[in-house]
Structures are given as structure tokens and as C-alpha cells.
Amino acid sequence: MSTTTPPPQPPEELAISGIAREVSSGEIAETSKIAAKPAPSAGKKFPCSACGASLVFDPAAQTLKCPYCGHQEKIPHSTEEIVENSYETYLQQSRAGLKVTAGAELETKCQACGAVIMMNAKTVTQECPFCGAHLESQPKSAEPIIEPTAVLPFKVDHRGARQVFKQWVNSRWFAPNTFKQIADVGRLIGLYAPYWTFDAMTFTFYTGQRGTYYYVTESFTAMVNGKPTPRTRQVRKTRWTPAEGQVRHWFDDVLVVASKGLPAKYAQELAPWDLNHLADFKSDYLSGFRTERYQVGLEEGFANAKQQMEPVIDSLIRQNIGGDEQKISSRSTQYSGITFKHILLPVWVSAYRYADTLHRILINARTGEVQGSRPYSPWKIAGLVILILAIIGLIALLQSGS
Image (tube, rainbow, N blue to C red; front, side, top):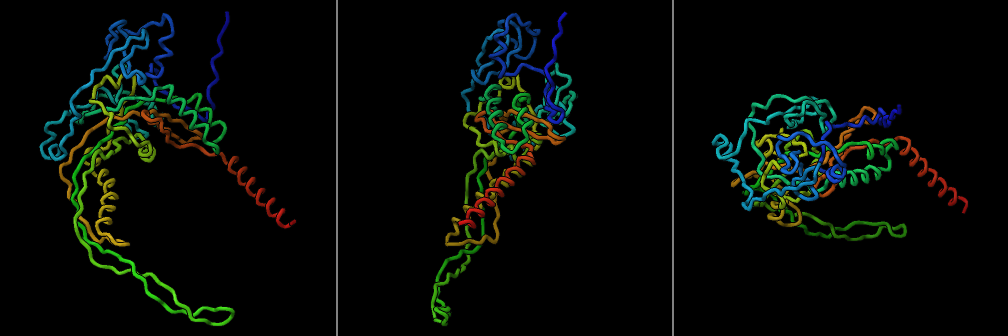
């Protein structure tokens, strides 16, 4: 009787984070080629009309696709514009007019990183896509949540994400050699991350000063051929005059990360997002992927949006003051016509540990942009320093010999 030797496990220092095994949309093409694979029982959220298996969203075809028989079903598109919700109405009238649910059917909050992940009713345990910690399903949240208004569907599939992931890993020159193994053994999890978008008209009243340059001639004494010689020069001065006024600006789709699982720095650097391709929210797009519930609330989200607006307003004030330099003494901004959307954006996530340090990599599943942390090899850095010193020493030796 022959036995099969299990494949070698990755080194302990890599400790690659995994996930509960599911058929992902990026594996559809490969899975459909396997003959006589038993199909799961019917009755899931999107049963295949041909074989009864569960349909998942296929980024390449932009349809629901059966990973067992290859059957495809189109997702109906709405011809109506995506709804912008009134921020003031939400705050003042107890969320009137908004779709607010009592929470997810099943969800779990990661005790390590704080992310809240929606879970399938048949999934009991899995690993956190952000940090690899063990998760268990919990009862639905009692806290009312705002349902997503729109979704940006996955465009980069699993195969494409793995390709850019591998390119990114291989381009990290000063990473340890063992780090590059994660391009082969590291798992990528497809996740819809929560975001807010805000629109607002701003009116800003300011006071400040306008600085205008002028030049004066100054006399000084310089040493010329060892003798003091009178000279003149032009010296720039600034004349300051009071300034005040008002600037206005319309902000459209100011994007705010509503996730606490995504590292904020890397999540922001995944931009730009092609928000003009947002689709009216349908749960069809989520099939086969994970979904994170927002942890940054609406009011906190708008406070973050204001911080993003400030540099733009500051620039407008300086333009309005004019002159060569500007000083802003005070400013007061009023916001009107504030609307918002809760949207889901697609991200491929990989979490792994190297030498007991957690590293996370994010991939924009629309553009393929990769952001994340990586370890550094002290030996490679020391080698580069030694090489540079050797080159400097060689140059100095050649110059002294000449």
C-alpha cells in the first residue's frame, strides 16, 4: 500500500495566515476543469439553476458563475442613479429614510485587530483576513447599521492578484530571501471593505494678511584685493496688509475609510478608486468574498472628511488673499447640502507573520495597486553599506595615486 507524503509546511518564522477553505472567484476557471467533482448541496443564497451549487461572483466575466458546471447568470443593473443620503436628516430625524438593519445574520469581532467580519451562516470558524487571529461566529449585532448604498465590484481576479502580489514581493530588494516564499505559499483573501463618501458645499470666512515683495538698496563694504570697497545690493522685503474674505467650494465624493481592520496608511495609498463605476448595491457581488462591517461611524467619518477638506480650503484662501505670501489668522467654515453614501470597495488581503512581527499586504482589486509592510534583512543592508564604503575607498585610493 503506497502512502503520499504531505507537502512541506512553510517555515515557522513565516507562519502564513490562512482562511477557512472556500472556492474563491479567482479559482473558478481552474475548478471548472475538474471532472466529476461532487457539487455541494443546494439551498445556498445563490443556487445555480443548472446544478444547484452555489454561485460566486466572477470578476473577469462580471457575472455570477458556478464553479462546478460553469453556468453563468447576469446581475441585473439598475438604471437609476445611486442614492445620496442626507447627513442632516440622518442625524436629526433618527435615520429617517435610510435602510437600517438590525445587524448581520452572523458576524465576529476580531479581538486582536478590532475588525468586524460578516460570516456565512454555515461558517463556524475562520481566520481574520487582517491579522490571522482565530475567529468564531457570534450572534448578530444588536446595533442598527446603515446598509451599503453602492458597491465597486472586483475587477482583478485571484490569479491577477497573485501575479501582482508576486511581483511586489520579488521587488523588495532588501527583504530576507525567505520572505519571498510568501509569494508562493501566502494566501490572498478577497474582501469588500467599508467606506464612506461625503459631498458638501463649504463657505469659509477668513481673516489674514497679504505679503507683497519689494526691494531696497543697501550699502555694504566688501573686501576686494585685500582692501575695503563700498558696494550696494538689492534686498527683498515684505509689506504686509490686512486681508479678509470668503471662499466657497463644492466637495464631491470625499472618500473615508470606515474599516479598522485595514491599516489606515496603506488603505489610503490604495487610491485612486474609479468611483464612477460604482454599481447599485446588490448582495450578488458579495458572493464568494468576505465583507467587513464598518467600525468608523457616520459622524466620525464626516469628521475625517473635514480633515481632508482643510488643505483644499487652505489653498483656496491663499489664492483668494493673493500677493507673494499669505498669512491666515482665522477662518470659520460652514457646511451645507451634506450627503453621504456607505459603499463597499474590493481589496485582496494577505496577513502573515515574520519573526513574530505581523505584516499585511493590500491590493486594490480594481487597479492592482499594492501596498503593505515587509521585513528587512540586516545582512543585505550591511552588505550594501560595505559595498558603498569599498567603492568610496577605491575612489580615494585612485585619486591619491594620481
